[in-house]
Image (cartoon, rainbow, N blue to C red; front, side):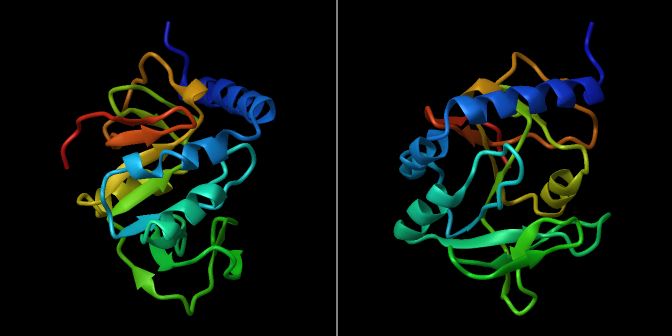
Length: 185
């Protein structure tokens, strides 16, 4: 019997927390696979909260590879996120959802590739998020952007049941490798 999403999220959060405690260097190893990511001029990252895989090492590697970076900003809680240009070390403030984000004076940009945190994923591009819908609304508003999960390899599950509003990922980057799911735009 399939658990409801609340139970799945609770179990996935506990697993991700264990993975983070067990492998504190996973994010650094994931950054070693930066060259495997699809080409993109502007890459959206995120600032890790809780046990999310930290994107700091990846940000440095992407910038060194010549990619421009940005971070998502929740301006309105029920709307798609906007993206503001950002480089490691630049100041941040909390957005409307309480997440660290670039200051309002930062340039608003359109990313070609959006890296997203997640609680679980499957090899068909399914993604279990936190449940706020921010990334699904944003993916729907930006259908041309590549959608890449950033996660621990141990967060992979056999299959996620997706709802109509859930939008599949094109791939996932983990500490072990980059996997392309073969999903077209």
